[in-house]
Image (cartoon, rainbow, N blue to C red):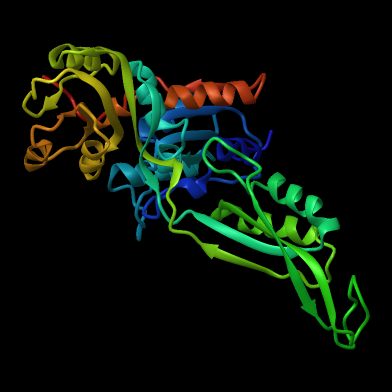
Length: 364
């Protein structure tokens, strides 16, 4: 099996187009055309993890956090990033990172977080913006079903829990071809008025080339009229964080005890107790202080995240319980999810969960 075949499966799990603009996801080191010997899945691709990959004959390391985040001007082994990269290259080991591509996925990091706590009725906390486009095109009635179905098959027409969504309206199209034209209806130099159907569908912007390819392949016209618009709508099923509910409310102390147990947290820093029971809970794996207002506006009784600064605890404003459970802890089950996903997709192939604990934060 080629490494590129495994990467294609990883992109199905966490499309790279879902990642945030600041992030560095995908293949960071390695040759996609190399034969894969095994996959080691980890949280951070540190030098010790590369050693583990060598020992276990895995030439593809799939990590959550990208070991290469910003550009390197020199690779001399002077720090932990450079040492890991050098060792990977010397031993022909590829490194692939998923990070915010999986953070933003509906079944990704924050759904895993919610499931670990037993939260139900989950939905995205901070929906992704500037990610939806609309295609408008026109064709004759006899060609409508073929065009529309081709667009649906290419990924257009999905809105929330619905698919095959479109809007269709009837009108009259006009045209006149020149000496180089080959019109489907009418003749060259003939002014034609034809009944046409206007088709409108939305799609995720990274699918644009695929959508247009489907449009051109299914359309009967020699020249296909179409427009593409960027929409301001947020994508309700893609985004950072998630909010869900317990079946039965918990007292604040009992809630924090549950979180500590389920997420194996070494310690929890939290804002003052509000005196309210905890039923609706917002979560955001990793650094999530930017979403405090989102959690409050969505009526969360508590917000679990990491890397909160001193003054950010004041932002709870006694409206919710704000808790920092640790960066690694909030994402700790992500690598298990990746292993399970790959194992189901690739039969009879070595998919190994790293035994290295790469959490740099220790508790006394």
